[in-house]
Structure formats: structure tokens, C-alpha cells
Image (cartoon, rainbow, N blue to C red; front, side):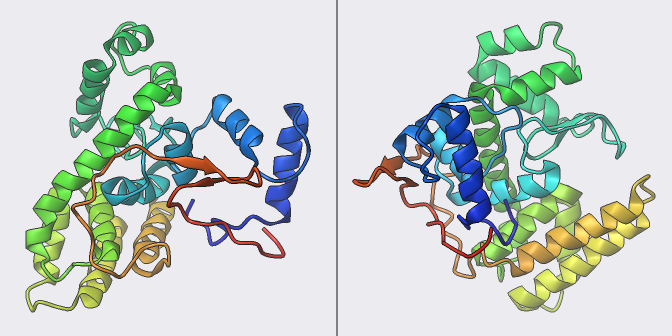
Length: 289
């Protein structure tokens, strides 16, 4: 989802579309027309990811505001998977879902309570004995009704975190800075992020300098923690901090925090039969991809 190839509809994508159309008995145009898009939405994914297309087309949620920022963080937490499960490799107990809500912090319990509150019948069917068995979590991650709950909780959590972080870093006004700080807080905890900001912000650095300093602090902290996968954890931390600081997918314009975190998404089929996201990023043609 954060690859430079995102949005590129090249030969490999065309080939994949043709293979899908052939398997589904559709005309092999290589174009995502209305019939192909409806079939893509109809068939349930085994490993659904919270990309813009899936959120808007399948879950009918707009990829805007806090949900957009949470979607980027979800890629680094669990490859964007609704089904992502970490049994306890980091000492935080079981972690699950888009933002890897953890058992130790109590955030996973909060998510499950939201599942039960919003979808009581589905929750009872999946979590038979109310335990954290992996097969229960995988089933919850594949259920579209509970995926919507995950998306809503992710957007809500990011909004609440931003309310805590914004007064600590008033110079952080852009979407890029908000995404960076929220990702930092999701990895290190809101308290950890606040402590880093206070250490880095004494001389009131510019937004750019603040983010660069926080990147160094975050990486140094992970280096000091004795994790079984220490080298990989450091590299992953460097990658996510650097992505949020430099990616062209994030805007340097002021964050519009008034945009609702979750709202109905739309897709449209044009006169030529091709389908597109309403208000979404337009795919670009390139010679490869």
C-alpha cells in the first residue's frame, strides 16, 4: 500500500485483471469495468487489507481524515491486514488487527468490547468461549461487519491521540506531521510519544526539524530495547519514520482535522464501463508495474 508502485496500472496489473476475469467467466478486457469490480467486491478476501480501494469499495468507508492516517500506520503495524495476529513476540501479549491492538495495554480488550457492542450476534458466533484463540481472531478479521468496527475504532483512536499530541507540538500542522506523530504514538504508546516530543521540542524547532529529531529518538529507543528480532525491529522503525517524513502520499498542507474519520465511500462506473473511486486517487499508466 505504501509502495512507489501504488496507483500504477501497468502490464502486471493488466495481466492479473485478465486472469481474474478468465477465472470468473468474464470478458478478458484487462480493464476494471463495472462487472469486474462487482465481482471483486462480491468475492470475500482471505487476507483483506485496509487500502483505499478496499475501504471505499467493499466497506463503503471514505479514505479521509483520521482513517486515512490510520490506514498508513496499519501497513507498518501488520501489513495493513485486518487479520494480522502477533502471538506475543514483543512481550505485549496477543496483538491483533489494523493497529495491532495489544492485550497487555488493554486496547485489544477495548476493541473486542466494541465488536460485542456493535455486532453482538456476530461476536457471539465467532468468540465461542470469549478467549483470544487465533482462529477466532482470524475469523473476526475476515468478517466485513467487524472490519468496519476495526476501521471506526482505528479512526477514533487516532482522533483521541491527536487531541493529546497536538498541544505538545503546536508547530506540527501538516497532514504529514500528524501522520508521523500518530504513527510514533501507535508504536511507542501515547505516553512515550509525549515524552519524546517534550525532549525534542524544548527550543521550539521547526516542524521538519522536530520530525527529524523524533525519528532519531525513536530509532535509538528501539536499539536500546532487547527484542528477539532486534535488528529487524530497528530497520522497520527506520523505514516507517522515514516514510512518514518523506512520502509523496502525505500532504505538507495543514491537516483538515474537521474531516470525519469515517464516512460512506462511493464508487462510480463511467460511460465506457470503467469503474473508479469517487474522489479517489486516479491510477496512472506506466510502461511497467
